[in-house]
Image (cartoon, rainbow, N blue to C red; front, side):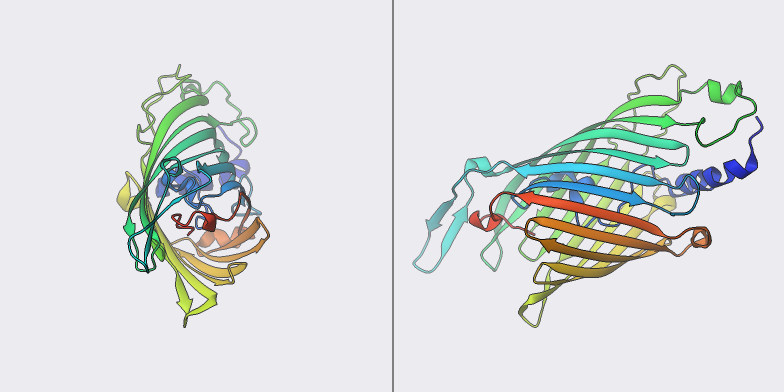
Length: 337
């Protein structure tokens, strides 16, 4: 098989990077903006009905560069009341009604990486179990989530490569389009001032393939995410707040794919925020955002720390969200992190 090397080079760089990092799932710099995209247990955590759109263009300026697009929806099944039980004259214990524990969500996505692309849909169910109360009087929660997904995995040889030998035996023995159903799991512990979460994706490792006429070998990897974050107020000033967070991610090829995102964002009255994030062996990220009424806007710029920065104008990610419903403070038993 002979391939025009000038057209193949950008795709080859992308494929090599993907294999070396063992990443088969989308990457998000604004994971703190919509953690539901990587952890199904977050569905409905804050009590609002939320619609979120994320657009990410990676390595702008490099031919056939990666791009990710996702549109998500999540909600909490709530009733119009909560139970407030007085245990003493000065203290009240607030508990949810039976209808307030379930969160639902879903999203559609498209993730392309050179000649490869994944397009699919996901649906998630989460159950938020109250464990106790923090020092501030708000409850602590353990949330468990399970998601089912179906996606198309495709290889496009027509748009990105020029082939002189279209009858190559290797290419024709493998399907260029397959459909893969799979499952994800997540768990999150949330209190008034911090949270910790863990998630796993691709639980079946692509064991079921539809359209597998070429007897393709399984190549899907399981991915693991460990997240955590906290709220810190400046000298008791409620107008200013800093939220440090971390995302640790890896796959079945642990030692070849481990990566960490270390982030700190500063908030002013919860309406404006700015922050920095460092992704190990990859990029330094600037985060900006604002809230207007029920609308949220966030932007991330990734400055590559690897050699690829010489050939690109950086990576750009835009997130838009809108939250419907009355304030979650009406439900005093919800920790609106």
